[in-house]
Amino acid sequence: MVPPSALTIASGLPRGLLAAVCFYALAAFFLTFAVYQQAGLHRDALSAGLAILPLGIGQLLGPSCGIRLSRWLGVRVAAFGMGVEALALLAVAGLVVYGKPGWLVGPLLLLGIGQGITLPALVRLNVDRVEPRWVGLAAGAITAAMQMGAALSVALVGGVFFALAPDGAGSGEISIAFAVACVMIAIAMAAAAYLSLARPGPASVGLA
Image (cartoon, rainbow, N blue to C red; front, side, top):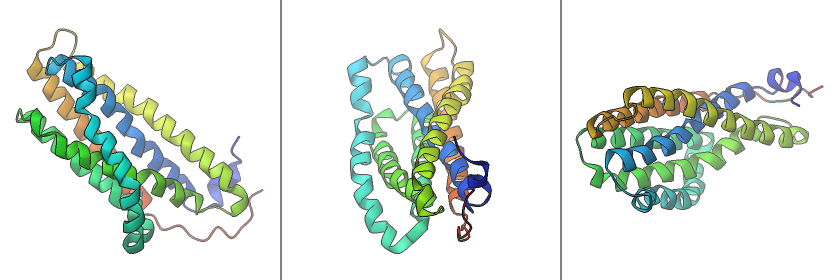
């Protein structure tokens, strides 16, 4: 579906797609957070759902913050948003390790804001790297890359999580496993931020 020339002539697009794959490692967070809340903290499904509400609120606030930040950061706003997410994930990991789940509201809100800043900025960053006639292709490719990132992260990060916290694991083991998962996702987010900082050359050559 994607002409190979689109990945060679459209300067910076391959790195942008790889950044999208790494960025959507956040999908594994929702899986592991739910298990941590219910099996680790022994909360019911409703309480676990409410616990992640700050992240959703942050996602609503993030895009408006991104518009303002883009005036100062320009194309670097996507990397900034992912940096915010990486720091928030590390904060979550630290609070979990030190047994302070009641303090997760702040980092979760920050994580959502970072997500809200990054998502539209990352899509725009990649769309801007191609000629106008290939905008639809680039938008579709970025969506596919994020879906690939979600699948890979759930498999890899989820695999590590459940290896550290198998069936019958205690609260302590689940907490450690969740903290490790958060660190892994933060590393992926930092890698995505680095990849998105690549300055593309002008896509002046037509794609075959």
